[in-house]
Image 1 (cartoon, rainbow, N blue to C red):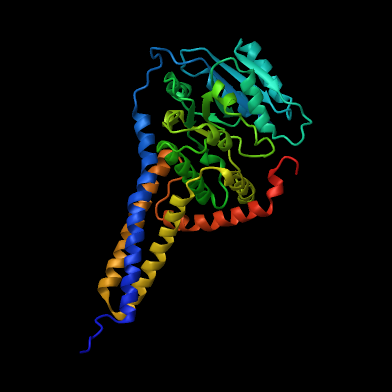
Image 2: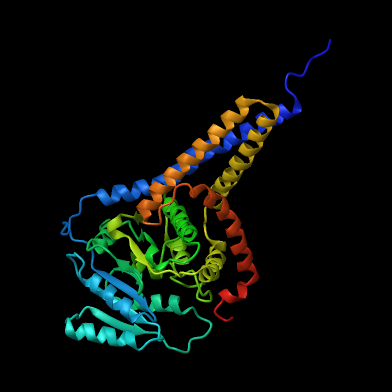
Length: 400
């Protein structure tokens, strides 16, 4: 008895590729899309929440610590926004001058005397420090100089757009179990006008979606130095910056990774609490800064498996769909080619719309048709940045 093969090897290959495309599409449209859409949904939900400027009981007293460098004008603007906040409890501002600019002292002196701001303080770090991260030391000294139980950390280039920012960032501390509040902080798109700006904006939005989605799921592994809050006691009891003072970068993610847990961390991503900051506007500056971030992340709880699998799924969807469609056309099998092409187009459209909604909520540059190509490009450029980080690792230590 003989058996006739119903499908040729080429047909089997075409249907196998179609099945791979289907599997990749299901992953991207379920697990991956859920994570990305969840960030935008959380921002919109928190933004729509009613604001009470004078809750009872009152929120705790807060100290705002600002590490200042060379941007005195930006600092003066930021201080004006801070003192205009709607906050019913005691508040102080501690500015740490890293020793680079005398203009910082002039700004603080002028505001203290002209506006009678007795709750504005200035401290500094020595100029000739060696083998120690200046920013990490500055933040530590600022926290030590603070008088209140809750710290909100900013940079001099942080930009506030709402008088509700402080209240929304500190409100979670009215619950005694909360020790860390992770706020949203992204580059202001208007500062980046150079070539490749849309990809850089998508990269920052994608980064924010990764760490915000993880924090929203109770697995926080980093925050951002331009907008984060924590209890003073928790800062020192966790060891603060110990063990990382020899690294130039990582003053935000390393500390948060040590302290944050599922039961003690809150995410505040409402639009009123979001912070924007200036970011390098050239491709060369971006290429210098990004490897430093990857170098710092080596020992953190980054969800590499999930998003790595998602990047693999995106490439699998592209290549498997292209192969199945090509073989279908060659075999004149319009069923497999038509189904696979429709699946690919549908997947790209849904992912693009999801990303557009989330990027809009994050106030990044909106993107639609360019999203999927940028998703494909991201793992390749990240691999290049990681390679540069390994090759130039000595540059990321303070003794280099």
